[in-house]
Amino acid sequence: GGVIYNPAITMAQFIVILLLWSLLIMVTRYLKIHIHWFGKFVEGDPITIVRNGKLLVENCLKANLSAKDVDFKLRTAGVYDISEVKRAIVERNGSVTVLQYGAGSIRYPVIIDGQIDPDVLEVMDKNQEWLDETLKQQGITSVRDVYMATFRNSQLQVVTYDQRNETD
Image (cartoon, rainbow, N blue to C red; front, side, top):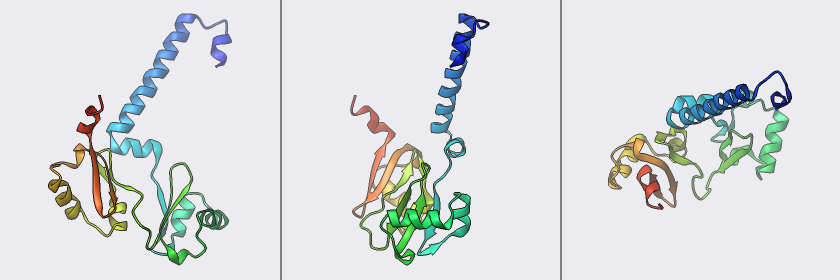
């Protein structure tokens, strides 16, 4: 911001720097969306801190959460007994999402941007073969064609990349 007030920098130099900065942001965004591992590197992954009623201390430490923080986040989510939790996940923004035993539906997408989340399949007690067969029944031959797929009310709801043109 202070660059525009510096008399040693010409308007042409400022515009070149601004264009380079804009290009860097656009390239990073493109790579984040289209190259899965790059997106994970830039944004990080959600971290599971409770699995099947057991607190995963190593993952809590990886998420920089003290025991006091974990207890507070779980209480804030309405959890007072960890044994009632099927999964608790620290999201990229620091919030904690809790899935308790007997909870109605999985809140996570199974497929995002053509990439399968194996952890969600595990929570659903499903496997890759089930997913492939379900997609095949809906006329989808490749996971890469799926923008997002969510399992709700015992059904896989799929949105493909082709559906983006239907609203135009």
